[in-house]
Structures are given as C-alpha cells and as structure tokens.
Image: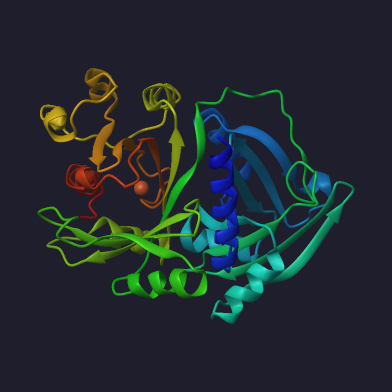
Length: 379
Ligand code: FE2
C-alpha cells in the first residue's frame, strides 16, 4: 500500500516535470443551444443530469442564459443568447446546437495559456480573473478545430457552486441520475486532409501523444470510410480522437457531419457508466434513441470477445456492443444524433479493463449509421 502511494507520488512528480500542460481533468463542456431552458430539461429528464447552477437575467447577466448540470464528474453548461445579433446566436445559426467550449481543469491557467501560446496556439481568452464572495477563478482559452475552443479553468481558490457569476440552481423537478460517471473521450470531426494538422496541434501545442491510429482499412464499409487518430494528454484523463473522412463510394458520416455542422466540430461525447445495462435501460425508458446493429451481431459475439460477465440476451435486447483488446473488454452504444441536424451524439461506454475504442465494432456500427443516412437521403 505504502509503496503504491509512493509510486503515485513519484509518478506525479515525474509527470509535473515532463508535462508542460498538466491537466487535472475535464472541467466542463459548454454547448451553445437554441433554447437552454428546454435543453436543460432534456438533459435532466433523458440523461439524468442534476441541476447545479444558473446564470441569466436573474443574476444580472444581460446577454445570455446558462444552465449548468452535473452527473458525478460530468458538468454540462447549456447557453442561449437573449438578443439577436450576438456571436453566440450566429454560432447557433451556423452550426445548430453544438459544443463550443471543452474546458479543462488546470492548476495554473496563466501558465497553461502562456505555454500553449508560445507553441503556436491562437488566443481565445486572455488570462482573466473572476471573483465573487466564494473566491476567485482564473480562466484563459485557446482555439482548436473549427469554432471550438479550449478554456483552462484554475479553481483552487474557489468554493462556489460553479464559477463566479453563477448562482445555485435548485428547481423542484429533479429526475434521478442514471449512473453516468465521467467523460471518457470527446471526438472531433475535421475536414479531409486536416486530421494530421490537428494531431500535430495536440502534440506540439498541447503536449499530447498519439495513442492509437485507425486508417480506412480498419474503418470502412462497402460505401464509406474514415481515418482516426487518438490523442491523449500526459495522465490519460483527456482523450481526443480526431476523425477525417476518407474516400468511399458514397458520402461518409464524417462528410455528412461537416456538411450539416458547416465545418469541424465535436462529433460525440463518450461518457462512462459502471453498469451499462442499467444505464441504457434507463435512457431508453426516458426516450433516448440508439443506433441498432442487426441481431446477427450477437450470434458470434462470444467467439469474438470470449467470456463476459454480462448476459448476452440483455445486451442483444438493448443493442449494446462489445469489443476486446489485450487488456480487457469494453461495452458501448451510440445514441442517434440528439438534434435536427445529423451532427452530435453521445456514446455510453463501460470499460472492463480495455483501454481501446471498440475497433471490432466499427464495421457493424458504420453500417448502422449508413442505414440511418439512407433514410435521411444523405448517403
Ligand atoms: Fe467514441
């Protein structure tokens, strides 16, 4: 036990010495949406997020209304503008509802800004201190792909509910949680030929390393293909797969995303659970729709992944996919897009040792996506 703790401390020291951008975890994800009040209701009702904080007219915020929701370590911020002609409104017009800010929790927001700017990042927000009666927070930010940004949040001197400017939001309506734990990874879709640009950005500017790569031989169906590389920060708490379309006979799901989002952006947010059968059962009961693979997927499942703890019939009924790597297995399922445009969706994932991303499921999954594209007339 003691040696474990020592090892951990040594690892931390080593990490601190090596990593010019130490990141403690995902701080929050902010979506710009058409109607933040109704979106908050959806994330409460369907996904079991709990109300945390509010900022808007009632707090003296004149240009936007934001709701903050939380489930274990996942914090979502949903923001809408209060008047026409705003940058936020233009963002929503251009992209539909989508992720604007992927915020990272850091020890030192000033240092995170200086180190990334020095390495070529474009400034989004100069280091800024925000204060209220609960303490002070330092924020800074840089641009990444498309109009997406990273905000660095330093909150070690803050005791408030979320950030200065927000008050506690505690409505009567509070549907229960559904077991979501933390953000496992967030995927960015970028244009053809741009994957390496952004892989290099995360490597050179943010100090991430590439942990996996998939090419079109791994990820292709009869019609469509894509390429993907997964970038991870030093302690592995932040993982960003970056996808670009590859040539296929018909339009790939990545191209469809880029067409409808009008540029690069966040494609999906993968969130973990410790019991995917219970979580997905609950999501379905609350109206969330998932992609389905043909039930024949389950005929050879055990041959492919070996023995697993879960009951195959439950997985089959819910449409949960399984994949194995050298370290263990994982269970995963993908929602349909959560808005009118076929853009952003969620992945629910349970890891049982596996550290990979479900490569063995890509083919079945992309065929399922293509059936949906066919229905939309966008294949
Ligand atoms: Fe994923």
